[in-house]
Length: 256
Image (tube, helix red, strand yellow):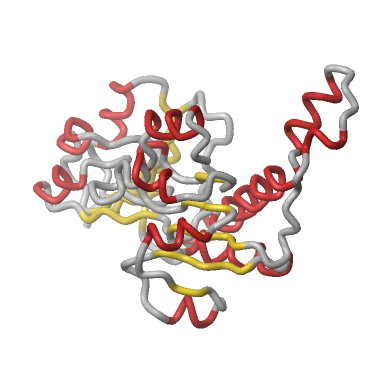
């Protein structure tokens, strides 16, 4: 019987290449190939005889059609925007993702951005580097305690972010139409069923949802108009979730 072949596919140019923990596969009758590629042709060649492909590399219909034996694809990341799921489905290939990968790190980054905005750290840093010492220029500074952090998405990242913000005294609220009730209850997050209603009361808005057909440009002109003019907006998800042109208009018009 032919041994199953698992291919770990990554680019040689990747700054932080993925590392496969081979010990996790002990006792499993499988050959593991850690393949670093330089070109698309090398990617096609690498996946041809794979039974399972694990990668953070984008997989379009051409790459998927090159998989002659594959029955599974695992994408390292949240969401499925890096893979042509329809093409995989037509080929009988199951697609999975790493839904919890790096959720703490992303939450840490979002929290850091919120704190930096609250403290006007970037403005003060730029002023100091220009030889300007003007403490009042960064005021007013919100107290955090008693202010509202509105989270769009209460998945793994959103829940981790809520835990990081609550000790500062922030009232954490969230909008997530597909989440069950238990994360709101267990993480002491107030649920809003109306996105615009939540946006209207939030001092800080943090966006953490996957990119798909339902979420593409889910934040646009109407959403920015619903926010407070003093609101601070952080997005730690795929860029396509935000209508960039609408964001620029909102900033130019002083809507956020």
